[in-house]
Length: 102
Image (cartoon, rainbow, N blue to C red):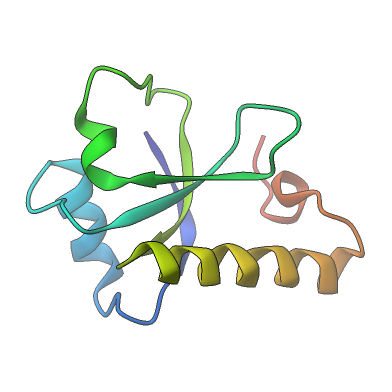
């Protein structure tokens, strides 16, 4: 799991560093949602419940997390904010280029 250095955070995330630590180490990870770049060409972003990231059902080695939220509705807002930010600055939807992710 890779974390972007400038995370987009929902309004309920008051301590992004601590939240990131909790999710990474499985401490009280229930209730958080992570927004990651999608590995599928037809999708821009994926939303994962943080508990799901700790299971064996998902290969997290290539997962690049760019946002976190405290609820699913808040995660939708964060996704909207990311896409708006990218489009306003680049007039495209190329999130990887905008965030300088290889």
